[in-house]
Length: 455
Image 1: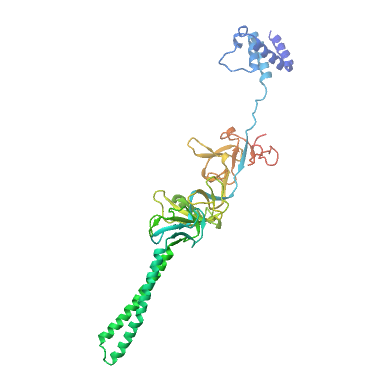
Image 2 (image 1 turned 180 degrees about the horizontal axis):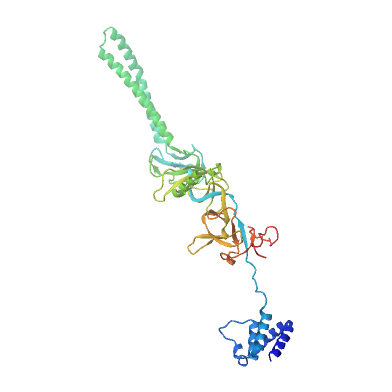
């Protein structure tokens, strides 16, 4: 019996070339046969996973044969159907960027408000009635231009009165002066007393003093007469008028007649926090930032987001800290020849802090965050294995992150394909291109090749 079983086994092995076909057909028979007609060992179980064809065939033969021949037959068919090498999935492909030192210009964007370069509040300097307004509201006026005319009649009368009084006093001066001279001659002959001579000299001095008084009165009257024409103290754009023709005004009243503002150039006041100011000073002192002439230049963005075409210059930083906001005011002067900027407009100002020559910049899409919000990146080591790396991010510059700690020059940071890898896995690395054209293939220039030890 044993000899007969061995001969049967050799016969089965001689037809091994058709074993795959036998396995496939046997599996098809098993799938198409009703469950109730199959042996108990071949019936599908709802909770079990699908078995390979070789196992299904083995179960079929196990139910159909017995003894030594059954065991040899099963072993032979298992070797034929399951002897293939295991399937190896391809390595995940990622794109990475190599960290290189870059020159980064660090800027700060701060909110600001515009304010007039010069402001003049127009108030009357004499009492009277407004006869006429001599300007058009909202237009540009020049320094010295007459804006309002106050009724000059009372002031002209005051001038004439002062002149008349001056003439009267001046007319009495010659007689008083001659009397004093005669008394001086008579005093030598003892014809008049010393007291009479002193009274004549005193009268002459009083007349001369009155002349000076009335001259001053005449000058004051002329000044007040000139004040009846209210003029512009500066050149600029005048606003609306707060009074109309016929209004009664008083000298130096609290209510302004109008306001003139010089808009070219114009100020932009920007608050800067003291914390940011201290950090900037520390970076400049430690050498992390380099100073240059462009640090005094500022760029402006309007309320609608458009860029203002002209650059401004930082004039000064205030020395007083606002206790409510903890900030100081930076005052920047911008040219405004076309009058685009108006006082009180909200703006955004871009100020250059300095230049960092050895900066580390990586694409923003390469940075992920953990459950606590801490940033990290996936790096590729020399063996093309993925390793996580925590970061300290300083700020965003365009579409990149400025990294202050966590990376070194020469590190390879995964930019695309992060979702396909995990720490410790081996990957196929391609160079990252910012324009999205990563066409390098293994073995082509630009590809970073197979992992070490790979085939």
